[in-house]
Length: 480
Ligand code: NBP
Image (cartoon, rainbow, N blue to C red; front, side):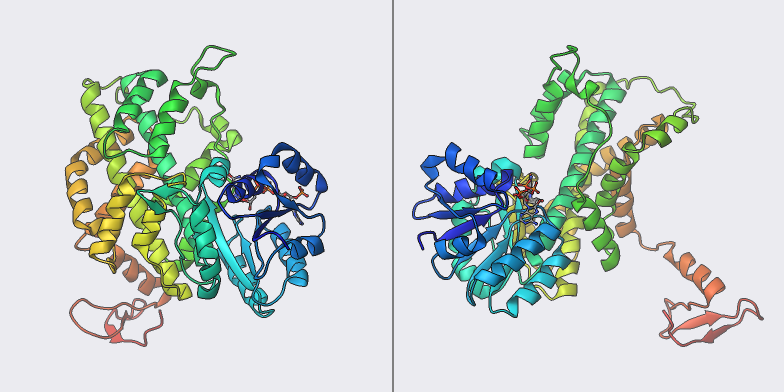
């Protein structure tokens, strides 16, 4: 046995992670892939890494020092189960199996339970940052037991991205906690991308500026409170010119956004938890809407607004309004995401340090941004904060932004430019603020057709109105 860590699955993510591990002092990395060709290729291309190759699971186990530690980087789903089953056969109690793929957290909970019975530790770890992150330093969100963190912590810290001197990894919580947090990270990423896309669309259609000019706007924004990786790459994408046609690349890319499913998981899970992640949901649905060309084709001639849809009078003022609307909506999206993590922790009995989560997202991952420091500050001050956006810093920012935010949502609606994530974030904000919600009327309707009962503002108890009788009110059993 020569290797202190192993990687199973040598496609782009696994081979980059293996190279990252091998580049760290003191590591010898065992590598295994189902089809031999990927292993051979990696060895040939990276002799400097000093990999210890294995061509069967038995060899892989024999190559690893005890307690054996292996990171699985295969296609999430059946592939993960196949590899886990194979490793359980050749590993021993005390060894550690890490799934670094994008597993659904409920799969991770199931796998952890099954593997634990063999005495082997199982850790589901969300790894963010794409192929470059895997190679140079990802943000890592490991779940699993406290014991496995003792062995795994130093290894993961050595390969993670570093933000402000701190490694972008922390033990998130037990069993599925890491993959849950990674899922919500991806959901927030969907929302952030959609909000940026809406900002671009509003500026383009509102001011007539070219993509290259809008690239300059984003580059400028990236020097202020919106500073983030996503804003930075947005400027780069908008500046790109298509070599074949000489047009802006963004104008020749088909406008149908793809998705790999983690955004949908975030929303499905939020629905189960009863957590309103409306900004994330709008982002997922905006991608779905874009990807139905047949529906869009038959809808093209639907009537639009009768008001003039000419360019705005003061482009600079409009752009500043869009910037503030983007910032406010972004605060809402992150607040909703952290709300989902809190709800998930309560449901699945995890202790999750929300401030620590925001800190490990400052580097290595797609949503990395200065902004995350503000979230860390908010939770440092009030760890049990029930709504992130009520932290003093965000209250101030929302107060500063809200007039602009309202103007932009109004102007989007008035001119027929779809801005679903901007609009729903504002509606969420106003819903939270409302002294009274029309939920009272919904309760009345539910009582009318289903005798679902209601509570009163002025008396304890549960009540039902005899709608089909004399319409007097009676005390009722609490049914729902
Ligand atoms: P893929 O998701 O494309 O998976 C390919 C790998 O899975 C190959 O090594 C393949 O082996 C192996 N595999 C399959 Br498929 N079925 C297997 C089985 N039954 N037994 C053993 N191995 C099997 O690779 P990737 O893009 O490198 O992603 C790896 C993981 O990382 C995924 O879970 C992904 O969701 C996650 N992730 C990806 C990114 C990203 O930016 N790409 C970011 C973050 C997380 P073979 O060579 O023999 O076919």
